[in-house]
Image (cartoon, rainbow, N blue to C red):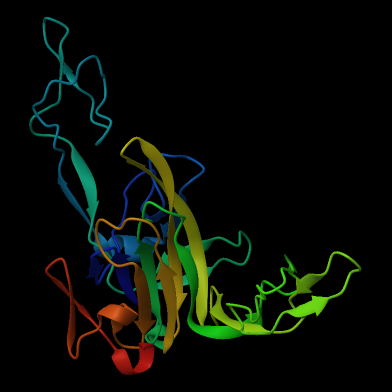
Length: 290
């Protein structure tokens, strides 16, 4: 399956790999335990994307550390008992972002693991979605299509005022009925009426592999941002709604995977060919998504 990272203003055709405490895809915030999920890489994939580089601390002052935290090499102590990193020793592992992979769930541990792409899995996509919320409510994850649902005002009672009849519900257009309750008549919404609302996430064909949190600090406030790693089957799509003030990106995202390409856009900002967001071009598959 192809791998993608979807940010508020960009689509990246790969997913970054974190090195510590083991090679993994990080879902959430590494700085906060309990808010992050780590999806481990198996040895085969690890060996294909890993390479060594000289430790960036070579030749540098290490304080009182007897061993480098990055590469594990013992430091050198001079006559003043000052610790230095050896200039010619010490390597650290680096990892290329993964562009293709296969994710499966282990039978015994039930944990997901990432390995090399399998031939039968090429029509799926592995997507890390990291879109922070606006200043209002948390992001709303839904299906990309609306479905009929009962009107939330069913059974609602309103005060009856002569000459000021409410009439029809503003949501479903059902007519309120008058109830003659002696000297205190009232209006009531019938137990009928439907409204259109976004369907629940995830829709069929999409699997949530992992969900983590990022802690955002902006303008003196702290908010949680949901990060999800998902598998998308061919011709599947979903929606993310954002609320409040939006400093970057869209108020509403529609994310669609057709089995070969990833498309991201918004219902109200679609042009004929391309969609532009902060100077970055994002592809739109208008016929299928919108």
